[in-house]
Image (cartoon, rainbow, N blue to C red):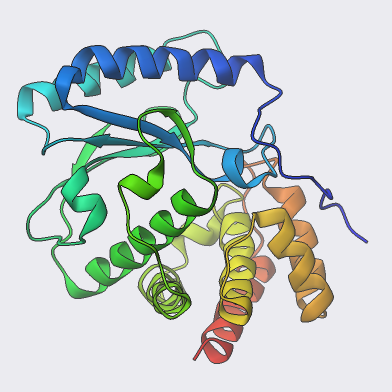
Length: 276
C-alpha cells in the first residue's frame, strides 16, 4: 500500500545502542535520586511497536516528591554526560521526571514539569504551565501518557503502572485528544514555523492520524498503525501526504515545501472539523 511498514508490536528494541543508553540512564537516575526514585518506564514506540532508527526513546521517571534544585542540577549534568556518549542514540532520549502525586492528579499550579526533548543540544529543563491554552494541552498529554502507561508501559524498574495511575475512561481520553489538537496544533494554522522542516512537519501529519484514530475508536495506537488506518479510512488527498511524511521523517534536516506546509495545515483543519 505504501512506504509505511506493517510492524508487529514488540517490546524489545533490536538496537544494542538503545539498550546501552537505557542502562546508563537507569543506573545514573537511581544513584542520583536514591530513595526519591519510584520507577523508570518506557512508552511511545518502544512500548506500542513501530520503533525504528528515526524514533526517539520515550521515558518517564516517577519520583516520591518534587525535585530539589541540587537534584535537578545533578540530573541535568547527567543528561549532558549521556549526550557525550559515542552512540547514535545518545541524543535521542525524550522524557520527563514527575512526582507520583503529579502523575496521579494534574495540577499545573503545584508542580514544575522537568522535561528533556530529543536532539543535539537539548538538556533537562523546568517547564512552567501557566496559561490556559498551554495548560489544556499539557493536561491532554498527561491523560494520554496515563493511558499509554496503563496499556503497554514498560517498567525498567519500579511497580507496575497500575499502582501509580488511575484508569482512563474513553470519554476522558477523547477530551484529552481534543485538548492536544487545539492546544498544540491549532496554533500552527497561524504560525507555521514548526512545520517548516521535516524535523517536525512529518510528526504533525502522523500525529493527526493518531488524533483522528483516537477520536474514531477511543483508543491509542502507534504511528504506523494510525497512518495505515488513516490512509485506508479517509483516503485522498491525505494518503499521499501521509506517505511523504513517513518518508520525510528520515530526513529531519530537509525543509518542507510551501505546498507540504499548506497541505499539513489543511490536514489539521480536517482534524479540527472532524473531531468535535
